Amino acid sequence: MSDAVQPFRIHIAQSDLDYLHHRLADGRWPAELPDAGWNRGIPQLYLKELAEYWRTGYDWRAQEAALNSYPQFTTEIDGQRIHFLHVRSGRADATPLLITHGYPSSVAEFLHLIEPLVDPAEGPAFHVVAPSLPGYAFSTPLSATGWAMGRTADAWIELMRRLGYQRYGVHGGDVGAGISGLVGARDSEHVIGVHVVTDPLTAANVATFLPGMAERLDADDPVDKLILERMDVFRKEGSGYLSIQQSRPQTIGYGLVDSPLLQLAWIAEKFEEWTDLPIDRDQLLTTVSLYWFTGAGITAAHTLYDQAHSSDWGAPAVPQGFAVFSADETVRKVVPAPPDAHWTEFEHGLHFPAMEAPAQLAADLRTFFEHLR
Image 1: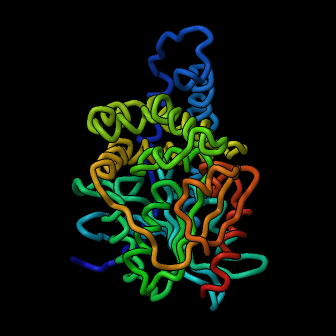
Image 2: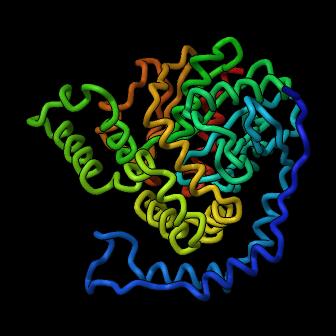
């Protein structure tokens, strides 16, 4: 296996852009029941407006240039092509920081977070390493089955070794939080701390997968009752997208790769449901575009299938930090944070704080890692 790290630059062929615009203009729209709202999925009027903007108003070349303003590279690890941003600070005392996105996201999630980390007005600075998860964006094609969180964590550890970082911090959200925790568990010799983000809905959703969690909660306790209600809503109404991908990724993948409308709806619905602060519509469409141009809809689904059939869990053996957005008292009951963990609560933001509240997230990262260098 070669340890070579190659410079990379994004350039989507104009023919691919033209094809996307043609498919959006020629989309076949279904009939819609009156007054369905969001209860049955993303409403057609909302999706039509977003699709039309993607076709006529959104400037992919400008977003491509924004991504290309950061140094990017590819390397092969464990037979898999890995794409990553590697943005070094000009500060000699900067701390290396590995940041991992989740689903349905991409490194475009970090476009407004990187600069405050690399070149802060005050406080510690970071050298930022932001990989695309295997099967996502330019970490494609997916080389094989089996890319659950543990295998990805091992790849991230190898990536940081190749980059020459002996001591580094890790950060992530969603799947990226799980991977970050495993990196901290498996590479405690080099990891100085693990920082993750969560919110009450994500915490309750994850709790549905934790063995025995429901039995440990008391339905007569008001806080526990709210957690149980959220877990029940997720199981009955909120987990359909996940169940499909965890059981039939190949089947749904044909539609995600062939139809830009389906790929747009698949991601935009979650951004609408999982945010409470306004996000940049162009930034959302950049993530959707990355999935579309690389065919990552199916390969990301395959990794969700692999994780559902895996037992990859592990507690970090290093200092831990938690940033909780739209915090309420339910989160501490279901998040397995050690008593001495760094814990910060924010009033707003949900699943995508790097997009919703990048300044607050950057500040919390600086606070957590400042004394761990």
